[in-house]
Length: 188
Image (cartoon, rainbow, N blue to C red; front, side, top):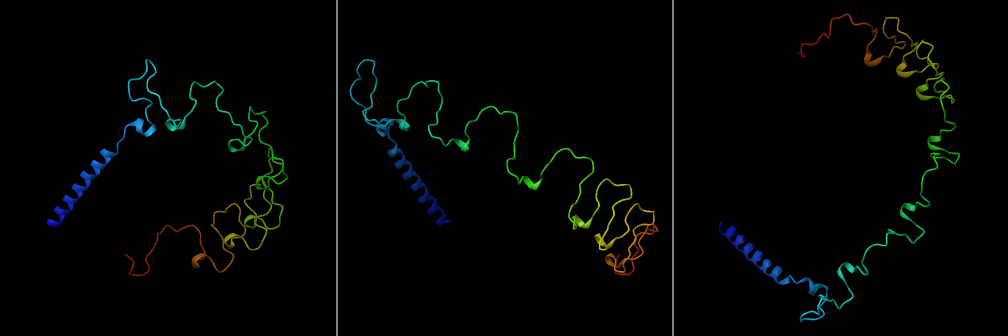
């Protein structure tokens, strides 16, 4: 308890000394800017004059603006924008042969869908276009998840043609409606 009171006493003494120093450091504005020209009464109508050329904020020759605004005298302007004015209404043009995303000859779609011109396509799916109503065709032997002969479902569920299926589940199809059965007595 005694050490806490001693620390509080030291803090209060330091705060008092700080306030005294701040009070003595405050100076009138005219001492910071420069001396007043004459210490006696000023001549009629002139007020106080400053004898130094350094003014507040180093602003010189202030007065009303001539109405011209700010001028840039250098050739390098803000953001390197030159000759700004109204747009001619043409929009943005690409002048190089390599465009964004390497897309060329864009325009309205002919309604054929996206065509793949390389032999190895996304997900190894070929012959894309408008669907004839048969579903997606896979032309390679190794397909997504090893599922073959996809198309409209005949109502029998998905067929797996390989012996190694997902998680070891075979003969999947519609659920018999029994739910999940617990095989061991440890599951409750």
